[in-house]
Image (cartoon, rainbow, N blue to C red):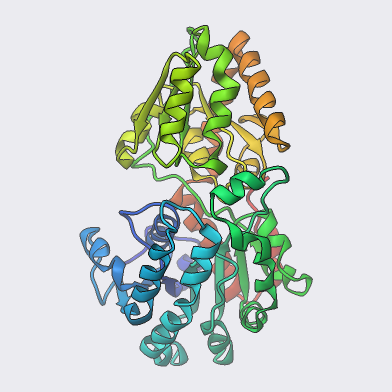
Length: 445
């Protein structure tokens, strides 16, 4: 057993720590998005509980390279008999580069019941024997993917919890063109997942449901609302984001964009909004990331005579902060961001976020830690960003204090060690048999 680094009062009194089986089908320290979230939370929980991680076989080598011991720290489940053909089918449909997210999630969710079947085959006897105090499914994050193991755990009185669940944020009105360019055809009928019979069983059998966004929480039926704990799924890896922006106010104002160059992220809206400031040298932009829009964006820059725009392409994780930390602002007009991890990364550097007040980013940024432009039509968002950029460029004096508050918020609430301790509090409430205590476990405002 690996002794956790975190000790709370229950440990000091009883000398025991919870034994938790972590199910993280998607978990990989060398990838991004959901697999990185799954890995980061599962790994951080090793410091607050006696954890064994169950993941899919494709993550095995990355776990080993990260120093974990197979059989002791983790178990890799080989569900490739079903997963591999469906991965190939998804690729054949052209759902790469993050496009067609809803359809890709639906396809891959077909593999998940088989994965859990194999997990139960391997660990069912141990769960029945009481070898684990609690079972926690971290990934998939999607609330549309049910968990057959939940009911099996409930039948033997072993607490089961899911989450943080997140996803399904509705496309805002006026962005149907972007929706189609993202191949999000299935999103028009996404709500049918609520009719799936396995959904009700999973929710009913779960002792706790962590929800990563207010929207996801609102989609949980009222009879299960007492089980919800709100916990945004993203956090900061302090080994990757450990520098601090100077917030130098010497002109020009410096902005950065971090993300895939795809329609819903809005990099074209950013260039339109920033064009007047770029032309007269009052703003520079560092664009970190790549994607299918890059050629069109570079053409916008050339044809519009926009100065001071640098396209960095995809950078290694450890190099992103080296570029971003030079900025005053994260300029990020994404209109459908589930989690918004890049917003937290900027805040952790003391870079002030300028975002659209919708979904994940709107929940992470407060009025004293960043600027939020109301969701609206494409033209309204461009106008809002243009006005705010001009306002900040004319009077940037408030940026250092706002950057300091953003830095403090990210470090106080959104690092992986902090998040692991928050999850441990949930574990303790469940294991004490005090479901009413869940309502007090809200750390975010």
